Image (tube, rainbow, N blue to C red; front, side, top):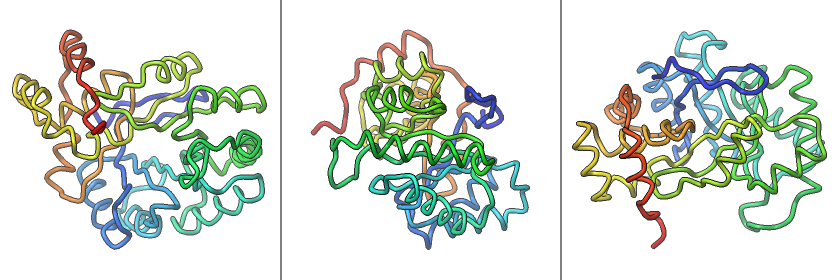
Length: 271
């Protein structure tokens, strides 16, 4: 499964599954990424606000694997908007990682996390133009967004030259975001599924547990495979090697009827 790829609309390939590092402290990130790389992951996802880029980069460097064999994603902090501000933040990320280019760079959110829903359209357009410049300069192989709605993305498409290549969103059983997924597919935007386990809440779902038994897989494997059946790119994370390995064992398929059954499950995080 890890050898399979999605292809961005510019032809750049990205592995079908990534290793997420959200909520992994810098002190633990080195060991976690080292374990992921050792067990076959070739796609590592981080962000400046995760405060773990330094050890993510160090683990990649110390792995002995060539830089061009690892797909590395990072993100512009959601509160940083504007052309010059974007360039400065990007350079900080490169310094942290100890790299001279990124494979994918994302705007982490269309609004600051402390002001969710704020209209930052003008600022996002200037930010996107800076990302286009970095892309055209060869500093980034692909550019995209995260947590963007259809309207947020359309504003960039209307005002800028390059259609985002990815949109990283929360996506899991119970939160399939049909309309946004359809919009992204129409515009050839790869959807990356973060929190594919609903930050662990899905693992105790009776319906998920029951279906996992049917396929002789774990609830985590079923939840991650569901994302792939929906043509999204899952980003599971763990600091435990057994689970890191488990999360990558996805060489099976869920029948279309069972996918439809999973589609009927209510969002476990709406409590």
